[in-house]
Length: 82
Image 1 (cartoon, rainbow, N blue to C red):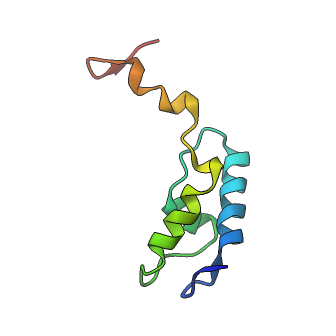
Image 2 (cartoon, one colour):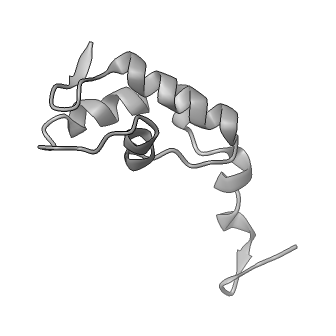
């Protein structure tokens, strides 16, 4: 399915970019901007962003890695412990 008509991005393109980023760095936080950059594209009119985000949310590889998600719990007085 085409997600972005302006840049010709499909749902498969998004999923492939996410899989590539996750394989390259399991600890990365995947954002829409990173997906566009991985595809060598930039958002144009922005009309696709709701569908683009929906596609990203449906991909389990976009979850924040547990090692990063737990960092906030380790904060104390603005500094990290350990």
